[in-house]
Length: 408
Image (cartoon, rainbow, N blue to C red; front, side, top):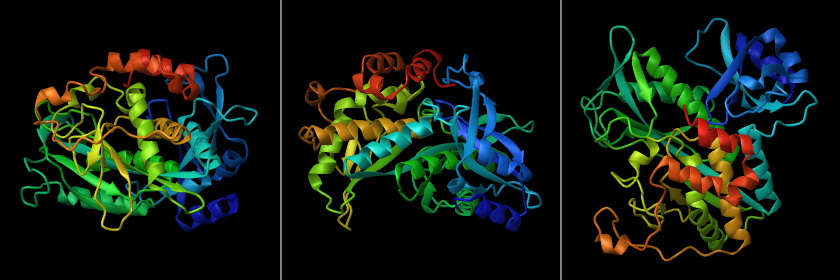
């Protein structure tokens, strides 16, 4: 749907009374303002005003009047809201009063990166795998430290107490236009994973944001608390947001060298952009343990590496980046990965030799010469502040917000 008429028909057919206009701060935290359905035409024509000075990282103290312009292609019903007088959600572009894009809108940054790739004849696709824990609440509704179960990797009921919960989440995702491919129990107690189909970067980022919102909302409605933080339980596996990335030529002539060069660009710049892939101090507690990478390396089918090239009987080739975690803003993370990969392609970079070893068990002497991911948020911040790639593509106020405010 693209036109007001189409949206109006959708609203009438689905008995929609409220429309949530959603957008994001620089950390990827979803914000929204709700309007009645009768206000939609005005919103689409003129936008809805917000106070940019109140939003983290927007640095809009002087020019604080910003406007939300709904993106009609993103409309979806919010299935966990009442069926009478239904609620729908639309993602929005953020603009100045004269209609020019607001440069610190990370969704707009991603659109620019996609256009840059297309100008070079390239399409990039992302398939996120987002992990989360589910905890019980007490009789006052407060989250406890007790996971929903003590099950392990791909266990079944009755050990897996989250089966029905994942089913409800999958049904909600389908109603919102997202197709789940699989769901299962992960390694940690109460840890879950639901995977959905890969897509273009903007759709993948929108779906990732919708997914986290749906999980939190449905867990809360069922009396549980979802936790996407990188290390919810100190001695158990952390939550990752593994990113499957593929590179395609718009002319249809995909080349193995393209993905290799794209991967080489990511490997070159990964330390500089880690602050945006792993924005919290807790992010760095996860590295180097329980299938989370520490070293900047790659190989095929090896989950101890930063990047692996998964086996695929269909012959399609992709890379899986294993360092990001679910607290990352997907719009900003995808933006920087695209620019890093494109630089690799433009400069015809080649990746270093693959390492066919389990880096969790190998002799430490082998790893001594390998470069490592930042060991702390402070180190990641220093790498980002010194990065020319980051300075080119991340507005100064966004970088300062990450450096000095941090992920809340």
